[in-house]
Image (cartoon, rainbow, N blue to C red; front, side):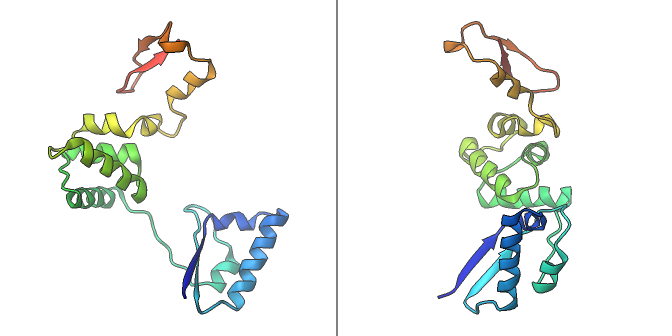
Amino acid sequence: SRRAVVITEVESLQQKRPKQQALRAAVLGYLRNPSSQTVLLLVHSAGEKPDPELARAAAAVDFATLPPERVERWIRHQAAGKNLALEDDAVRHLHEAAGKDPPQLAAELAKLAAAAAGRPATVADIADLVGVRALSHGRPPCVTVLFLKPLQPAGKNLRPVQPARAPFEAWQT
């Protein structure tokens, strides 16, 4: 029988820690005499420098990230497969909110398809369902500060606050 083994974050094997070096040596040893029944996939994170010795010992394939217009085309194509219509602004907002990771986008599209129930999904639908991940623009979302203080039972002493540049309602004690 055939099998596939996937090792992600291969760039960590370049660390000088004993465990990483032992795993790197084991992978390189395997690559010198691989099994004909096993496919070994080494997944390297984008933006990290590849290990030259691993790259020479394996068949390297570079998967460049999609440019924004291709991501938006992919979103439209996947939505159509789910019988989900998306307004143009909604496509752009989903891309900004969920990023360009296909599995994450597919999960968000599945939620949108269920929520929209046959009508075109709007920017408001995406804001409601996707959450606040992208509103941070690389910084921790402002709602993370809520967990620095213990929350009062049943919302006691909470009042609504509209944070700057955030199209959602947060709560502050």
